[in-house]
Length: 430
Image 1 (cartoon, rainbow, N blue to C red):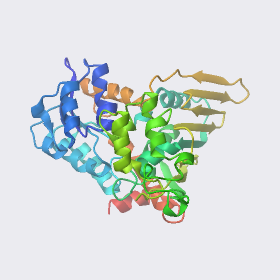
Image 2 (cartoon, one colour):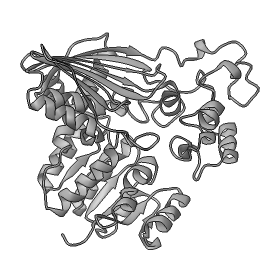
Image 3 (cartoon, rainbow, N blue to C red):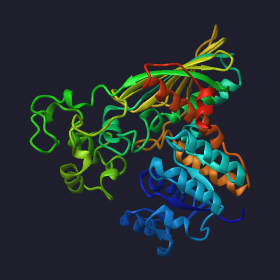
Image 4 (tube, rainbow, N blue to C red):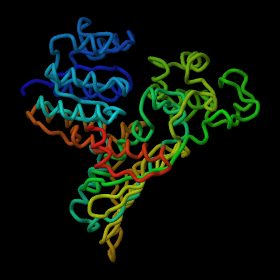
């Protein structure tokens, strides 16, 4: 292909605009956005101003965009979870290749329907499991395939969400309710289910899981707390979940530290301190974390058994100081321990000196999923330009992680019952 790969985008929010569209600014020779859709007029205007998209190719909804003649090679679908599959099926019928934000859907039958449609149309569907594209996990994958620790026997992985991130996304935010979005283990951690399956290298046979919504509940609201953080709350000073602290003062997430992007940009377009204060006073992100309508688990563990006997555990928890992932892989000839925040892997081959692999500093504030966002977009552009047909994070691969996550949620809500994945999938197929 002697021109940039062209993209249309459904959903101009944090993922659509900040994570994926921004790749055009880095590599205009590889990517060109030609159309987009979002209900927010300011975001449509920003798409025109920042990326040169003509006004006549900017639409209010993805459905309106999908009624038009095909306007690009690839469609990025970065709308809310329960909109994904209907838009994806229509896009495949229209002739688009797809970059699909995860999760595919909280409904397993929809995931399987998209997989079937992708095969029928022969189009590329890349699901945004961006962790596979990072230097951290791609290096770990290479080491394991090279036999650095022998045969994998067990794996432990932890996702530290960070207290303020959980309060933002899963208590006050768009993913706070499973019936409106997805269970937390799918919305947040299908990334991790995908990575664990990829690293182990064989199918997962069964899972069991425990967890609950334990803390962010009305009965845990301290005496003197108010319904909103800026409405005379007597507990404000000592509350780490105070919205003013998170969006204004926090050294990582707050605007006074120079952060004008996520999570501040979720509250308002083009954040300023004044606009953020207005949003905290009146909008959903200023509510007391103990008095929201959230229902997703705030901590969960998953135990997994894989074909051949390997086992894995995964822990995801709201109650951590930092937002990062860590992992330990134990094999017959050694172990590898990794800290994604430090971007370091420690390789310990039994009977040999430890080897530390420093994978380098990741420059931006939130690391774009460890650099995976940009690396995935580069991969997609190269794949489509070369006429490739099967991506690293294809819909086939992604459906496996969704089955694991949805089975784990079933187990969590059924007293930790062990769930055989083969039967779980067949049940969804009817």
